[in-house]
Amino acid sequence: MDLQRKIIQIIPKPYLVLLISTFSMIMALALDVVLVWILNYDYRTEDLIGAIVLPFLVAPVISWYTLEILYEVDRLEVEKKKAATYDSLTGLLNRRAFIQSCNSIFELAKRNKQHCCLIAIDIDFFKKINDTFGHQAGDNVLAEFGNIAKTHAKTCDLAGRLGGEEFAFFLPKTSLQQAKILAEKLLSAAKTAEIIYDNAKIQLTISIGIATTNGQSHTLQNLLKNADQALYHAKHSGRDQLSVFQPVS
Image (cartoon, rainbow, N blue to C red; front, side, top):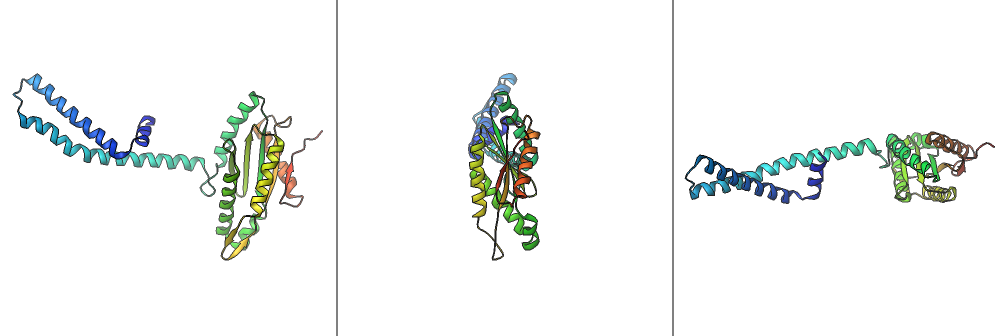
């Protein structure tokens, strides 16, 4: 199945049809030659023409429709995999995919003694947005923040929607200072986002909590918990700000 997918993804359909048709003609001609040799049949010119023309007429049609089915199966497989990995509204990793990806990278970073950071994010007053403007407006806000997250995420970063209005960034090989710079950019981008719904401008602000593995978190769950605790502090300190987890001495 993997080889089939690679072939249909690399080679354009018309070329595949040509290859299959050519192969069919060669195999048909070869089979005729073998049968003539085995049966000691008196081969005529019209037989040779028939062995070539018939596959030439039939093979392209059959191969075209067969490839149509294969391409459709491949498309459905891709969509199924995407649906199982990404949040359909924001385009970010869904919770399950985010946690799984983070676990793999976290364990590798821990073995290599590399620092990682986790940024927990919550959209401020999201319930109020839904109550005031409606759930479609709330979906627009979530989608807009998804665009903001994808714009500011580096290639090596993981960005996910954990559920509702909760998001997270996992930043491998990242210092606390670098994480704070990204968090400030996210705060600014959210505040300046232009979200218009039903001729009304929706103000978007977020609260952020940051935790680091630098002597604070030894498991991914611990890192998530610490980031959530810092987020809780940011929200209860006025929102629209970031807070860094401070371990108890």
